[in-house]
Image (cartoon, rainbow, N blue to C red; front, side, top):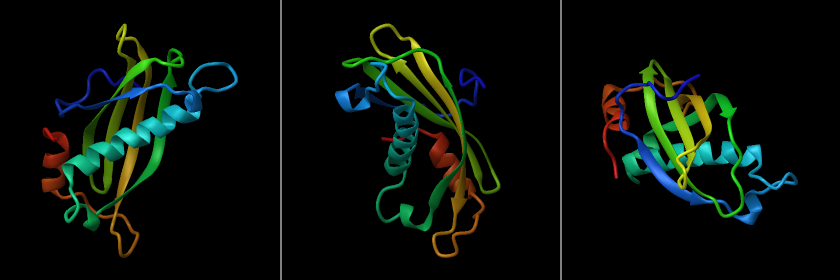
Length: 141
């Protein structure tokens, strides 16, 4: 998995600071916290692209995560979470995430997640409309 070369889709980023609750018994960020951040940045991107009144007709669920943990983050580190959408086909969407330390630009974690769009009433997969593809791969907020 490499997140370096995917489509020219817009990159959506947010900062986060490592706090005590993120730290495990080895004195670095727990791997489960990275999974939470991967989900959080994807959700923030979606909520920015689709405001209240538009998002209710869609539901996203994770089908699978592929995560590479490369370096540790420590208490007080300032991180940058960056996500973007790759291929969207049928009811599935490929999403990439990078987590980097701001101070030195070190790549700490990279992930590829496959999401599935569901119809909120039937809870069954729903084909992703071209308008959704265009909005999710274009600049937002």
